[in-house]
Length: 490
Length: 127
Figure 1 (tube, rainbow over the protein chains, first blue to last red):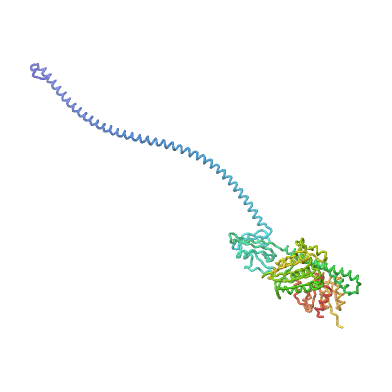
Figure 2: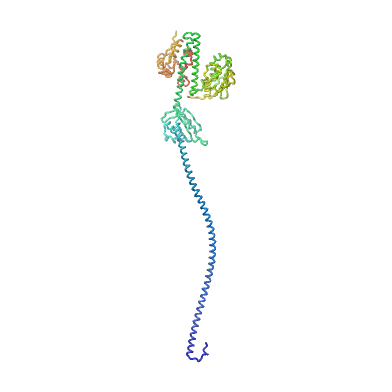
């Protein structure tokens, strides 16, 4: 309001107006302040608003980020879900496999148990077999000693312990030469290099023999039959095995047999000798002349008795041959000279039957290793057969030739009665006599060819014959090794 | 007339001894008899015969022992002895050993005639 317009009002009014103006000024001033304050506040607000805007922006950004993260999370979650599903499948599969495995495991367990049972069973039966084998080896009736390749003893059975008088404990691991003491019949120890175990180890040779004597601990000896064999594995000698047997008893039996034959021969021959000698004196007229009838009768007695003597001799030869007590003593023998002797002895018979006899020998002084006694027996038998079984005036030939470098051949052939074809197989049989000669000559024993064959074969030779037709003769052939027969010491 | 040669017959079998005595007497020998080895040994050493016929299997003392004992004697070591037996000699080592002695002979009775024995005796004694 403007004050000049209102100049004459009273003073009060002027004063009032003044106060009012003043109040208005104060209010204005207060308003200015307030405005300023408001402005400041507005500024502050504006600043705050700006700050809020930034925060909001940040928030938005964070939110946006969060959204992205969430998306990513979602994607991961989805992936996780997929994986989980897959895992579930895998887990199921696993479970199935596991179940199968459980079943398999159970089956395996069952199989294992069965197997174990079977193995146990087999082991047991193997053990039984082994034990049995062991027992068989150990309780074998013959002595048994095995060594390794160094000659160390690795096995000895009960019989061997008993025979040697030594315990297993003192023997196992020792060298054979300390334990298996061998000696010959005179008690001389066998040389170490000739010991059969040594021969088996060094040369792989097998030794079989009956003349070795095992020496006991106390040095007493007993006869043994032994076989020492190398144990060969993959072509190498890995040890030896020795089987031996006490043959004292067999030796005694052999001796008893020999003694029996001797005694029997003595007993049988004594009465025959008596008849022989007295008949001989009667026939010779030593105690007075006999009339012709008496002479004839006595002649029969005498001849029969001679036959009996021959039969006994042949039987003794046979039993000797069969008992193996026939001693073969080979020596350097002139076979042609021996043949001449045999022929000479049979001259009376050859001449009596008017036989045309021929003898040939491949060379003079034809030496061979043979037992002359046996060789003589062979030729004697063959020649006397030929002479006996050839008709009067027939031919007989004895020839000695070389069959080959190592063998001599004796051939005795005749133009005699021959051997019936169907009896060829029996001609060497003991006591067999062919039908055709039995009628003609009653004297034969049927033992001659049997003895000849035995002698020839025991001498390492061969005998055979040819007799194509009856009454067309026979040829006997014998071949014998020139270097000799095997010596036997029994 | 020269003295008859004494032949000692050592033989346990009476019949065989008898035959030998008879033939030897007939052939002009002077046989003396012994019935076993023991008796034979005594007679051999006391009578010193020119020759002895000796059996092997005999009671009291067998022939091989008798032979050995006779051979141990200074007179007996050279006396001719004919072992006259029926044993086969082939497997008796003792007989083989005995035969290596030059004045020991071996005859198998059943194979030999009395006359052959006499011939052998005469041959040995160089008659």
